[in-house]
Figure 1: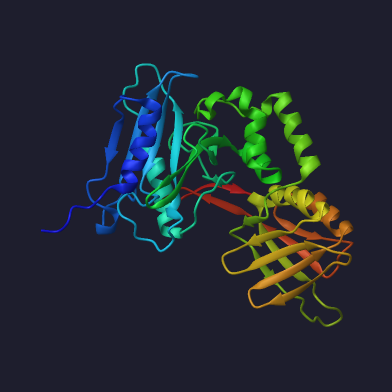
Figure 2 (figure 1 turned 45 degrees about the vertical axis):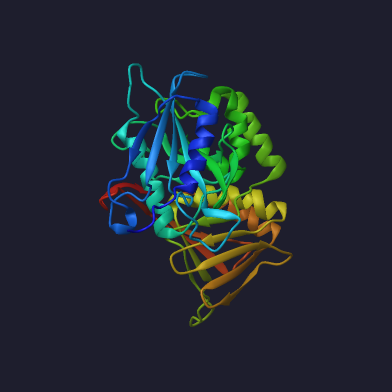
Length: 353
């Protein structure tokens, strides 16, 4: 007979939850067939606790991003991916089970991490490219991540585990986080979001003048913490010789992110910080400098923008198909192409630009 598998990490999470919720028995949703054996769900379990303060809500916690059984990875300091996700969701009157869409969302986060190897950290954000609750009219279309204020970080026999709380956010809140920083925007909104509980029916917190003012002041004071942006349509064509003069290099961007790129440029290049744009086949690393220019190395472009070029590009980048010429940097033009937003089945549901 094989030895019994020890649930060392699982037990550590259970002890952490018991310290807060005592004898409350959570709603638990386990996985019938393990992901490594071909099952559809990467997380081995999700527990949901019922709370009434600061308002009625579910507090969900995952089991599976960390090493919940015996230690397998080589890093003794960190358990698995180093975190578990939590999600606080406003509970409807009379609701006795957490909604299936929320459990599916957490499993989808698992699929993303397990398939890509990308991990979430305190202060991260993620564009969902649509409602976080499919087939709803919620304005929450993105997610932010912060350390769960109650659970924090624990030490287990398998290494450290941080509990990251996932929070639903709107498009304009996402842009504010990109052009300033996630934790700053969440802090500015805290008075209107006690417990950082996700409420599908809420409007944008930026509709409140005091929140909008704090975000504007923070962005102007500190610039942007976003040093990396992905753009599906990113490409680069170097200068070409023509009959009478050279054709300038062409940087291509998708329309969806042009406004965000514009604001992040202002919050980084004009603050003396760089910005990396990543596409399917190329990286464009933008840095501030005394004289605009660029160099190419395989699938990487090093683009230098002086202050005048950065300001001009910031002013001209809009989400509209076309070509932008820069009077301050004649060796490059920027082409904006339409962005096609698709649903999970690959159908185009929105065209930007």
